[in-house]
Length: 231
Image (cartoon, rainbow, N blue to C red; front, side, top):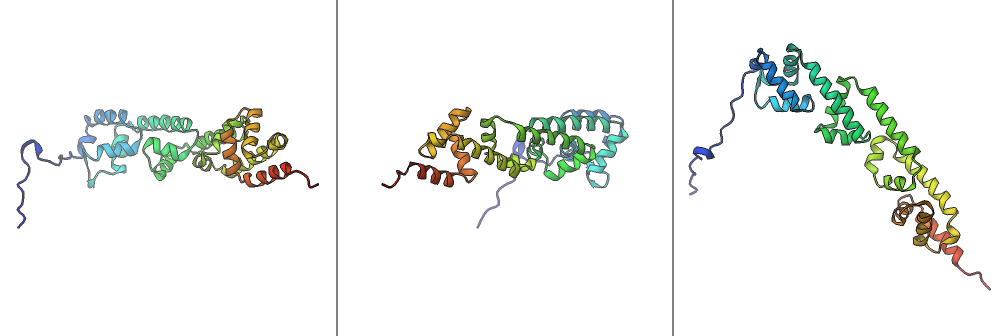
């Protein structure tokens, strides 16, 4: 027969913290509490997660609406919104326009990020930032940088330019290999020649040949030019 173990006692006892009444937040003293919490958080969703462990709502669990009503009552909703704007735009700049990475960096779900962007009226500004980074990717002429970006599928897809970018890079490589075919005997040497001429690592060039679907046709072309003519 399995014996029931005695309950833990003393410092090993786990006691559920008693949550305070929501009305503690609505009193004059609650303003300082909320201001301090805002300083320690990045956005309203993390603020709610912090407060809901310490406070009940007026009708059960503390909700987003309850919290925002308390912030507005104390006249500090604008303080939170200004902090959110700065954090959001900084994250978009740091993550070079990638929405998925912005959400990850701020600890938000994609839907939370979308709602926050809309609530802060930043949709147009965010799209302008993303367009700037799209343009940078598509107009960058540095071959090594472009070859490196080819391996960042998620980033390109996030910006919505994956196909446009790969099509552009494929055309560029097709143009570059035309000037180098006569100096190469196989795919490896072709990558070396292209890389040497244009200052790019040969391994990135080789990877691009494979990923862009150029490798097989290039091998055939190289093979045909090295086969000696029939007597």
